[in-house]
Image 1: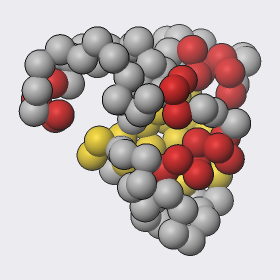
Image 2: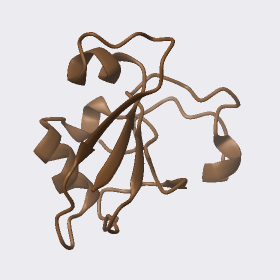
Image 3: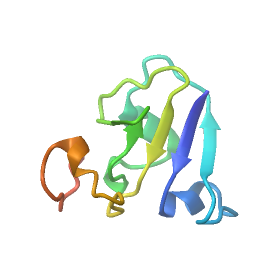
Image 4: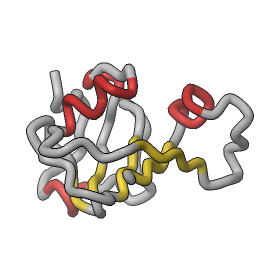
Length: 100
């Protein structure tokens, strides 16, 4: 089972009753060899809606294969991490969506 942690506007999109003060988590079954872009499609999300997203604490790319029982963090585009997350990506401030 995939454990999906939702942030920002994604909280209300998938759990309308969710409070911004709580950890909003949904689960989905694993799909063998599923790439991150296909996973987003399964959720009905377009890659352009997404900002930095993580699979087991590592930055997710479109072609990243999602491992079994992964923990996925989904952040909408335009929502910045508390520290900007720039140390994870190894570059300066991001002003454009890298998935476009």
